[in-house]
Amino acid sequence: MTITVGVLALQGAFSEHLTLLHKAAAFLSPSEPQKWNFIEVRTPAQLDSCDGLIIPGGESTAISLVASRSQLLEPLRDFVKLRRRPTWGTCAGLILLAESANRTKQGGQELIGGLDVRVNRNHFGRQTESFQAPLDLPFLSEGNQGGRGSGEASFTGVFIRAPVVEKLLPFVDDIQVEEQKREGTIVAPSRHTEDPAARKVMSDHVDVLAKLPGRAARLAGKSVDIDPEAEVGDIVAVRQGNVFGTSFHPELTDDPRIHAWWLRQVDDAVLKLRGSQQQ
Ligand code: GLN
Image (tube, rainbow, N blue to C red; front, side, top):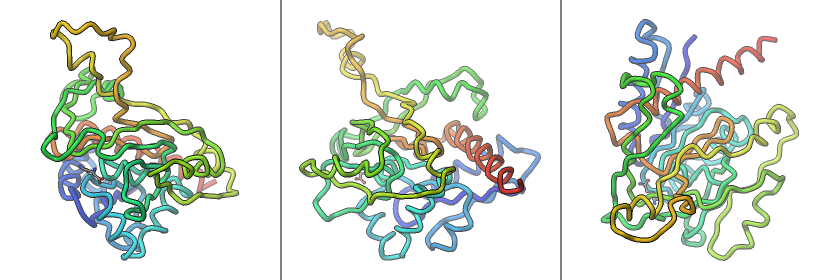
């Protein structure tokens, strides 16, 4: 059984994702070199051949513009929102997967949608304010994900003009209606499906998988009187069913653990899907 995973290759850090996917696959399936097929996606036909997809970091405005010119926007929405194929967006990719995004130039960008969240673009500031921070990712200790030993959940988060998930949105039909009323907010086009299986996965709730500790951690040791319990931190990784988004760029590290974890999710989703198609 070969599983094809595509990386949207219109702009941004797609080749870095491919490098880490190969590394993760060599770790996960050393005796099955044919199991994973990784491809660059630039056309609807290439997208159609994929079981899972990564949307890389880069510039979400540019990615959406090129996707629209390449007739890829609607097939992407179909892939993520209706067929609910496993999809992971990093940074700009997370913005594109959000149902709602703040601080965008009006008319300057279209969203794919699929994650019932509102993101705040460039939450962490400009390019020159890029930073790295250790993140605690408990889902990585679910197993030995990439050769660094199980139980080790710390991961270097690389943040470059990174968005934050500022709100989890309730799952309702036409989720976008309320969001549309907000000033300076853009929303993904609504999605309607009568397919009960697709509706069921769409109503999966949004899990928060990681937070960047807030002021409490940054100010630790600086004799500032704040209550660490009251500090919620910024949401930097979420999952809703098969759709996963991270504010940071694992592809800009040499650490394949998140890629290995995600490939396992893809593997499970594909097994389920192919199983149900055979019945
Ligand atoms: N803030 C950028 C955007 O709007 C994303 C930056 C990134 O992917 N590093 O697309």
